[in-house]
Image 1: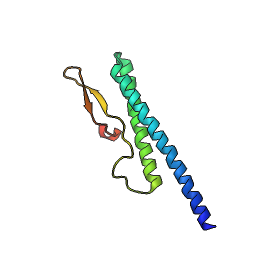
Image 2: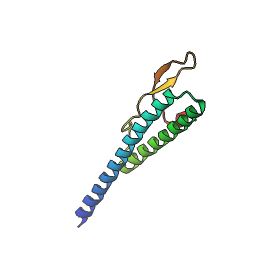
Image 3: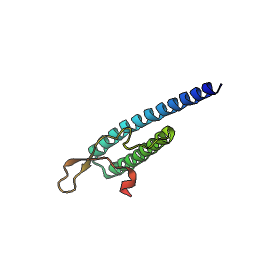
Image 4: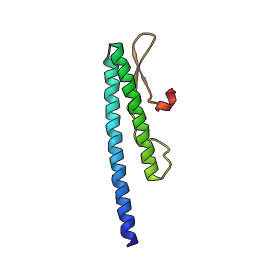
Length: 108
C-alpha cells in the first residue's frame, strides 16, 4: 500500500514538473518574440510597452524556475533552460549588440 502511494505521488510530481517545464518553454518563446518586437518598434509608446512585457516575462520565467527547483527539492547550480540571448540598443550609434539575459532582480 505504501509503495502505491509513493509511486502515485512521484507520478504526480513528474506530471507537475512537466507542466512547469512546458510553461517555461512557452515563456522563453514569448520572450524571444517580445525582444524581436521591441527591436522592430519605432514608436516610443510601443517601445515602452515591450519593455514592460519583457520584464513581466522575465519575472514569470524566474518564478517558474523557482517552482521547478522547489518541486525537485534540489539545488539548481545552472538554470534548467535559459531565455534567448537578447539584443540591446546601443546608445552610442543606435546599432544592436548582443548581451546576456539577466534576471529581473539584476535591473533593480
